[in-house]
Amino acid sequence: MKHCKSDDMIQLRAFAAQDEITIENWPPYPAEFAALDHALRQTGWIAQFRGQPNARIYVAEQSGELIAFTILCLNAQGEAEFRIALRADKIGRGFGRIISDRTLQIGFDELGLQRIHLIVRKNNPRAIELYRQRRFSPCGECQLVVNHKLTDFLKMELLRRDYFRPITQGAHHIGLTVSKLEESANFFVSLLGWKEVRRNEEYPAVYVSDGTMMVTLWTIKEQPSNQFNKNRNVGLHHVAFQVGNENDLNDIHERLITNDIQIEFSPELLGQGPAKHLMCYEPSGIRVEFIWPGR
Ligand SMILES: CC(C)(COP(=O)(O)OP(=O)(O)OC[C@H]1O[C@@H](n2cnc3c(N)ncnc32)[C@H](O)[C@@H]1OP(=O)(O)O)[C@@H](O)C(=O)NCCC(=O)NCCS
Image (cartoon, rainbow, N blue to C red):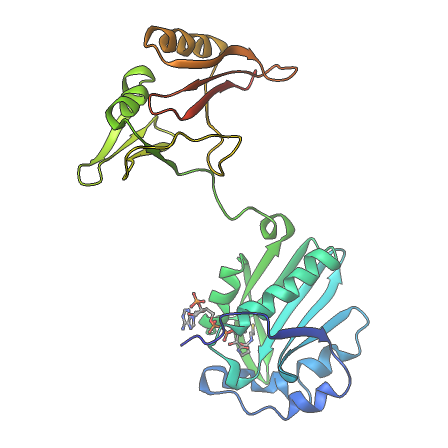
């Protein structure tokens, strides 16, 4: 079970000489990590990296107690190898995530690294999953002799662009509260050529889509409805749909006129252009923009 909900209590600081003894005296690793226990001991990872001018060793403290250490060894221009080890009693409680994130942040933000890479034993699924969730991806395999034993490793890397990549992939749908469900649905389906993809009679609600995105229309629950005021209320200022060319923008404008849809402004340049847009209010009064990016 995970106990670590907040990262407030974890402090990451640079390794100091006296930390080495503390780490060497940590309790042994359980069976899952028995093969890695040597990493904590006298000839382990600290001894390997301590004297290297290009290695940064960090220790994580929780309430003044040392519970983990991480290493970033800058081994090429803008690149570093990453390692992490938690104290045995802190395994499986979410600390790996927090402490790796802090170290990766130092690597990319403070040290300006372009790539952080690592090797992980193929039989260490917990570590592999931790790295995968931090957006590391496999980039090869290798075999190394560790403690006189040939060991299979997976190579993984995290590129700067992937670290900073937005976590979302665009809008999936927009949910709007409407006062005139059928008229609003009709605005999308009849006037704009969208498809009704689902109907929830109970709510009631109608889902419509233009094939690239979905709008879900939800009937208000209380009467009378309040009209949204974009200057006073917090919420949806407007929703904007893109069209492929200027003709389509003009075509929509004509359809709005024919269907008595309230228009705020007709097609006009957006600022200096070349984009053009128009603004209207669909039947429930939601401010809808249509925009052609201009090229
Ligand atoms: C590897 C290590 C840093 C992971 O940190 P941790 O806090 O113990 O990791 P977690 O228990 O949160 O596990 C990470 C993820 O793997 C998942 N996981 C655990 N065991 C797993 C398994 N057998 N198979 C697949 N996923 C597993 C966890 O559920 C978790 O995912 P979630 O957050 O979605 O639940 C830590 O266990 C450690 O220091 N181990 C000893 C030293 C070591 O192995 N260092 C890495 C050397 S490359």
